[in-house]
Image 1 (cartoon, helix red, strand yellow):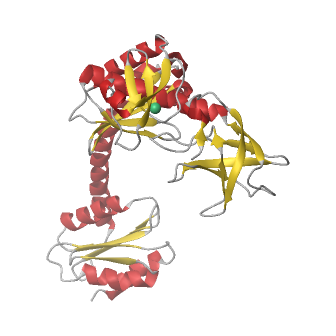
Image 2 (cartoon, rainbow, N blue to C red):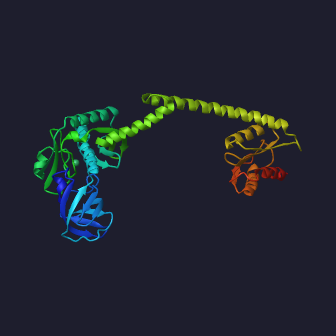
Image 3 (cartoon, rainbow, N blue to C red):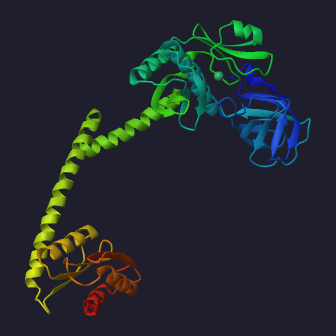
Length: 404
Ligand SMILES: [Zn+2]
């Protein structure tokens, strides 16, 4: 078993130890007689840092718990020479460790606040790179409860209460009113005691005084299988997150030329405007299609008792083309519309007035292959898309010639 120095002192960033073993599988790892490096467990992620030997500096990229109670330090590159018995000096990345201590101790305070105020126990804790979360065993949670728990947690932080480590037997732990008893594994338990506020069994790294957490800020809540997930950030992460939020909000407010607190109102107003403009636009496009259809019919002569309208556009979308085809074939009983657009998306629309004898779907299939596209439709209306606009006009004319 590796002697875990962080069990007694979470602020020990620098230590000396002796190499026990250099492992090659599953990947290159180092086992020491003692370590201050924290291995991933209980929701808290591993430390990183440096292991210095007599003649080189090795980068520790990950630390894990082996099943036999030993701690494995995974290295970025293989050591040039390192034998069991060699003396090393370990240095933890202090910034990363401090951040983890702030998040983790913040979680203890927050979990206790939810239990004390609303009897909502924490069932799991997760630490990601930029936020943390706890899952609460509760059927529901509301905004007020979130704010109240956040307030109490921050009061406990402001009171700068002592956070002490105690080792007790399992029986003693049961009698001491532990927030959550871990599954029976070992006889001795490590308790983290936040003065007169929380007592829980935990093997993680914690600050010495709650003031070192800085603050906790609660963010997203979402329903999960077991209850509710509450995201939070503590300490410097809370400041960094608030900074990022402020930057995003300020940028958005700038777009509206508004104060940041007026952004939701401005955004709602803009969305309402967009909806209303979209409606107006739809109406205008329909009116335009109708007017264009009437003009096209007026300038198209009748041959063999029918009017064949051939038209290619360079700036109309499929929606307009379909509207135009509908209007053309509705305004007169003897119309065949062979329409195309070259931009934004090259495409074709064929349509005939109800009662005309042709098959637009079949005609479209026959013509569209000449352009390397795909399409089809019903007897009276068909559409298709082509990869580019080359040869579109010629195909419209050959479609007209193909009509009996
Ligand atoms: Zn803990």
